[in-house]
Length: 415
Image 1 (cartoon, rainbow, N blue to C red):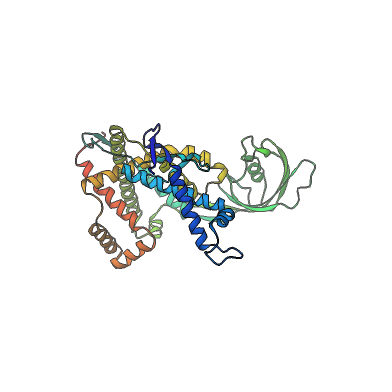
Image 2 (image 1 turned 60 degrees about the vertical axis):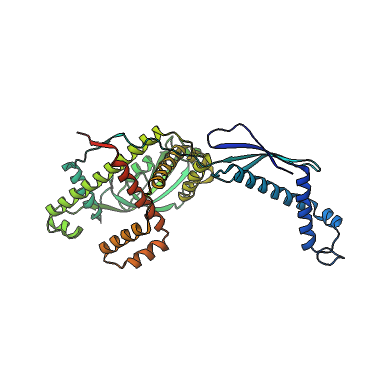
């Protein structure tokens, strides 16, 4: 009673296998399922497990056949995987199933196998490291952002302008209808929190004043039914506050942190920008290197992995169900690129013995503990509790893999 496997058209990592299970094997599976039911079910007039097989089959015929079917499909799948010595990438699918009384069970098994990645070429690539140059304009922009974060909001009695924070009562209605009381909103003008027509109306209103006039909704308004509509809008301006940033001086530097002077803060900002630029440059080098390795070593990626990757991101970012198809279309190429990157790193790590060891992990935790002035055991417990130990292991493995790659490839800095 041998199960027959006939390969169908396959592409990349996909495998389509026609499966045929002999009628005798189907009957044996049904008999086995029937015996299990007979030994466990309770039927009126019979002691537990003593109901005749014919009665059991009549009562539970559909359930018995379903159990036999599931067992046969599972057995066929396991036999094929063991016979072919393949590593399956994801849960297989069954298509074109035919399960008729007294006949062989036939179906087509669709599955994806883990890709075989040889990486015949991992050296001889030329990489350009972008230069890091911190300009005075960048430093000034960062200092202005610090000023903005330390700014205070002060009430004013004049009409609001762009950048002001307002508390406003807004009521809307179609022409001829009563606008009602409306609702109170805190808004920062110019931040896109209200449509332009309403912002213009607010900026024409003095604190404590109520103004009413027709406003047209923009043609690109998110809610399609309201696009281009004209409504009566009544605005009551309750309060206006204006942002006042502190002067850029030594006092601000001392308030921001442990800086004796503005020059010390400026130097710290420049140093941070330099480090950030170097980090970005290193990321660029790594991505260029991975891209060139992928281009030189073709391999397929299971579609199921890409779909799962996109689905996980959709759940993390709580994408609405009706927007997930669009989200998947936008994310698919990025997902495939990330999966290829991970496979390259994983393959090199395994082949070259670069996977993070327990000692690597202990050393990294000890290093972090020393910087924080904490106990290594506490750091380990925190990482384990938050599920971040695996993340640290992957990070260490990546560092070792990229060090190995950078030692074997030519990296130069752009002029």
